[in-house]
Length: 463
Image 1 (cartoon, rainbow, N blue to C red):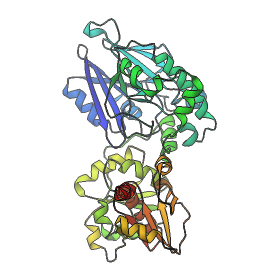
Image 2 (image 1 turned 90 degrees about the vertical axis):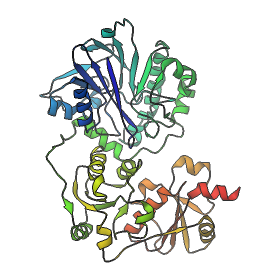
Image 3 (image 1 turned 180 degrees about the vertical axis):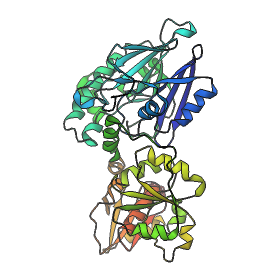
Image 4 (image 1 turned 60 degrees about the vertical axis):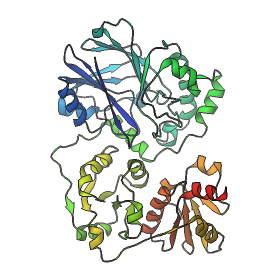
């Protein structure tokens, strides 16, 4: 058996390639939208991808299952659990086998048995793998999707918070409790291969280790230690992070079927003049991907600055709207990678890409000011200032500046704020407040300043 994992650090998402070397067949589990890397990896190993499957209808990235089916003709194994609201809507004309609890299928000499493990979503399933070709008569491991992570379990509140399915958080938490009890019955030696690692918003305390075992999780995963259903529900629903706005779009897209990427479709390169024209369009958003330390003094008026790093995809998902055309400013050598990051959460309306050099050609620049902790706290005491804490709910609850008002970064494009005051912005380390400052400048607020080092630096100053 051949086993490969592929990790998207911006989405903290794992895709798995499992191949039978005796027959040359391979299966992709929870494929990301950009499938070429996995296809090429299979070819290098002498394998042909014949099938793809996924553990559930994902809400945090665009699934590549339809891409593989349409572009490469692979067979899809998809969940048929859950009610009519959680059925795949793009199966007509494709080679699809629908799966229920207890269903079995094989890829060459590798067997997979389906476990229905609802909780994160009603249709969630896991796959227990047995490598019969390697001589095994007992299973090796389980692909748990967003059911069991290393050190955590999947959150059940996304359908309610992001997709608007009222009342599903509590029922999902109770489903998760029952699924966890079933997980505990599995042999301790089984490997656990989850769909996400640390950094994903699909749980609240995911570990950074890529895999685990059933036995280890039984001992050290908090969710395995609580044997009272109500206590489990209360703990699972407590302190879950904000559900990104784009999750609702992802859930819909992956249910009805994402658009198939056209390999020959190119995003045109924009000149400074074309960027200027784009900025004048009502339904166009210009995203500057330069580091904040560079962009803070040379913002293009009306643009927002989301630096291209591990957090890029998440914050664009929060701040951009799916009915907007996007123009990207970035390094030429990062163009394809940035576009793929955006397409991974279904931002397909990218109408232009401009080199960072356009900033130098711009006649006028916008800017915001970076203050030291002492400068920030002194100004925060003044009557003509308004202090914004743009961190998440848990961080705010753990402590904040006395003068601060809580306005989460992900909603800052639409937040009502006083126009007659200096806006002072901070987060935990300074990165999110820089993004927020650029957004506020794009909205027309003239006097915007943020705190270098954020609340963390403030606490260090107090000690």
